[in-house]
Image (cartoon, rainbow, N blue to C red; front, side, top):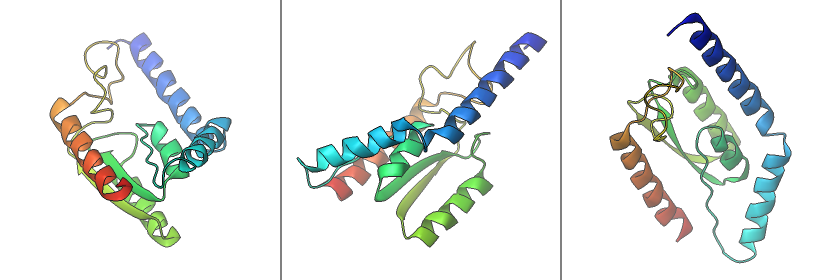
Length: 143
C-alpha cells in the first residue's frame, strides 16, 4: 500500500468516525424511532437490525440488545465493548453480546480484496454464525 492509499484509507476512517459520532443525534435516529413506533401499531414486538454504524441506530430503539463484536476489529476494541456493557448494565438494558474472532465487517461480502479498508475483512463462516444467532435471538424475543 503506497502513501496515497494510506492517506485515502485514513481519511475514510476519519469520515466514518465523524459520521458515527453524529448519527445518534441525527434525523436518521429520529426516523428509526418513528419507524418502530409505527410498526408497534401493527405488531406487539418489533425487531431492528443494524450493521456497523447502523448498530447505533438499532441501539437507539431497542429494548433487548444483541451485539456481535469482532474481537480483532480496530474500531471497537474489546475494552470499549466491556465499558459499553457496564453502561448497558447500569441503564438496565438487557443485552446478549456475542464475540467473534474476526475483523471488523466480517459479515460484509465487499470487505475483501483490493479497495477495502485494511481493518476490515469478510469472514463468511463467522458471518453465518452471527446471522444464525441473531435469528434465534429474534425468535426468543419477537415470538
